[in-house]
Image 1 (cartoon, helix red, strand yellow):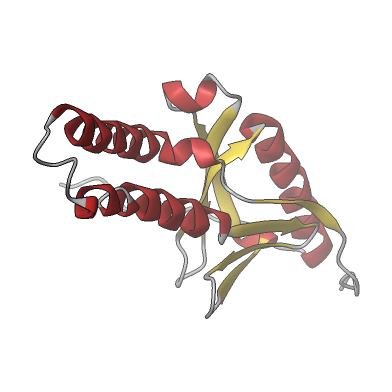
Image 2 (cartoon, rainbow, N blue to C red):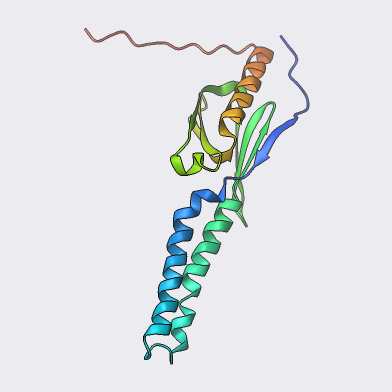
Length: 170
């Protein structure tokens, strides 16, 4: 049996792009503009400072979405994929690369414009049968890198993936 590598080397790490929140950001900016316009154009509202306090709602909404996206961390090593989420309490899930069975890249139009995409990994892991790395930069090249290391780990561990089709219905 082949020895397993004792140390891991980080291949890539990053966070999802904030472009995933562009719809929320635009909505919040329009909402803030509407609140300001109402404050300026409606004389009865200009005497009430509570209207300006309403600007905190879209500002906080944008901040929460920014922090939530920023608190997702992807780390790819030559042996596994780690996904860490959370700000105060953290959750880390790991997928051994030799368990990855299939790869795909999904590039929605708005993300493709900025060079990002989603990488979808179908695995043989029971707890994480599908792992999605959302809005990562250079998704196609990163998927190829993951594939290369997956094949390397399969060879190193002597793992083979066998697909068994069920017989056709009679």
